[in-house]
Length: 346
Image 1 (spheres, rainbow, N blue to C red):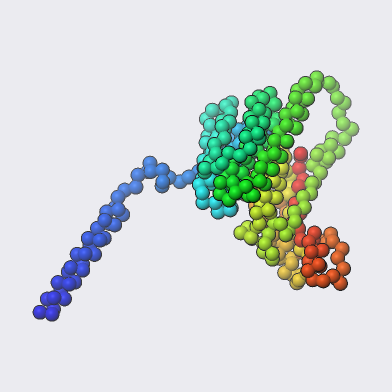
Image 2 (cartoon, rainbow, N blue to C red; image 1 turned 135 degrees about the vertical axis):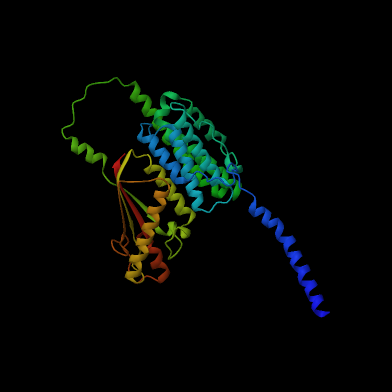
């Protein structure tokens, strides 16, 4: 009797399990539709970048408004992916870049990207800046010169609106300042474009030394970035980068991408003299590697890149050892830095 009761319990348990597993089995056997957008592979950053590079190689200027707009959308998507943004901003910015790129590929001679959507529920900030950028954008005779600056300033305004919606005005303000810088550069470029087009062609004697002119154009430019603003104390990875540091590098990337050609980028990390020299050498090198990788992720590329960590070598401060520890650390702050040296035509 006990045996029969146990058998009945086992059978009932088996049937209950089968009933529970049935729906799962049905789901597992359901064919996945190739047209389901949720399972289609999205356009990757690398693929979109390659398509933009191909357009430029085929003769579309990198300064073209639409090309620049696609690139700036791609750059802001990369930047927010590094920030682990889960709001939808990354996917939507990437989609905008891919859409503009596709239109440039299939409809040569058009100007896609003139409308700037407020993606991921970004707030619209500073109508005055939007209006001034729209005015410059509608001046077709000068947009060939100002297009890059106008396009990136518009994307920066969207990024500011996203920061405002997510965390408030304090985080939005740096992007507003970057948009203002872009507007200023756009005005300067438009004014220079008008002067250039209005100046009659006059034969000019060739320079005495062409190589000297090329050397002047290609002279290195140096950017010093405060290490304390770039990274958390004693850390060097991308996850340890501070918001202020990312903004410094975002602004630097915008400037470097205005170069028609970059021959060489040299990134050098430094520390102060405190601590073990071997450890300082490693820390400074790792920080330089992170900075170079961050710039490359934003689309800054050179024919040659050099990364170095010089530790406590080449100090720029002159601090006496007799200072109190806190005062000494503060005095040595200029030594904790990352330097970016760029050689290329500007």
